[in-house]
Image (cartoon, rainbow, N blue to C red; front, top):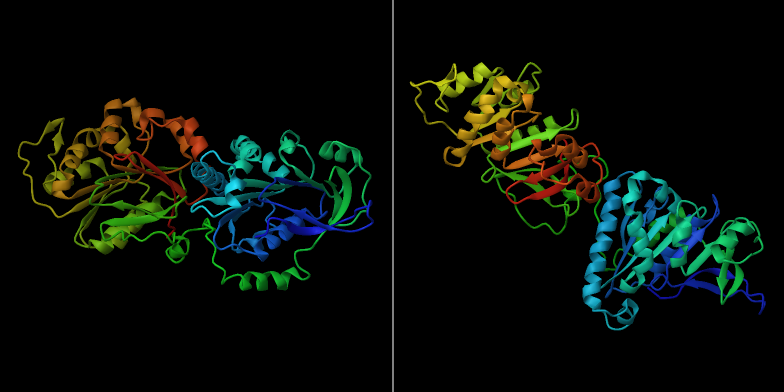
Length: 518
């Protein structure tokens, strides 16, 4: 990739010539301002093509494109384009900013107080990356409330990025929405069309309006305003772009591409989204339920380690889907396990119970549950608050209790949550018992003892909801209660349908995941 890239021609009135107009995206931040259909996106396309005409296979370059209008998707397969995301999924935007932050931190350590270009232009340093953040239509990005958390970070990138290996390239329709406050960080500015007042704001001087033509505008060269005309990326983009990408396929570069979910994650497309860096094997003790949003590594529940699982979440957000994944895994890999379904009047588990077959039981009332535990020798039945003295503990096969009866979280089921299930959970590893609370609800009457017994027994929890709002609402009444909602809002974007959180309580590990859809 040449440092000086030819992106057009400009009029040199002093010499009556038309020299080549060049930019150096490694050394400067670039801003392009223009109206609708003036050629802003075409400029980005031309710049991307120029950056790929001569690739250095020894140096890592990562181009991150935020494309709110969805006009640059055809260029996402270029070799050094690490990401090209529209604005449909906030989490993808967050991933771009987090990735850039991480790489800048790594660059800083490698540079050891030196300026990036001093090192970059000499011998390559292993691990050092040159990054370019491209935002096509900065006005749209800044106006979207979902992305307000990144405004300050973007300002920091524009101000401090060049010295650490990051340059920023943006297009805008005007200087509204706070763009005027950061324009001073862009040493190269181009204006495609607009009034002389706009040119005054952009360049600090009055400039005559250029000829109206797409791709034509004004910039400052050697302190003087010059009219220019941008090159097109291709004469025939529809045919030439695929040929260009195909010709570059044999060129290997060290760019780290970010995978991104496009719609549902299913068993059929699972390996398309799985990170190429994953080399593990989850085995028959781990139920794979999805992929981590950031690393795209499998997220699984290890039945050998987790004997009590809780699922929290909104209605219609995928709780039954998640439960089905886990139960089907158990039935497939451990057909000798006994499954006990504790449903209620909603009968939401009947299909899963009928599908499970084998050694399965279907219970629908607290009384039935007490009777089952007592007669099969799991736990003593309480009669008027007194334990049945004739109870005889029996040997049982490995047993999975799927607990979705809403009476559990009311007064009628309090003793099960407070006394019975915690005692069974205490011997779960020895007896091979598992508990899946598949629809955790608020405990009625603010029964803190019952809440504490339930929370203390859970080893892995799933949340299918926006975690910051959930924690704010539920507070300390769930296993997520010690978390800070403000920190969670900064850490995670809002959930799309099919998203969720995996929380390993013992290791205090929280991950946002895309859950496999049945």
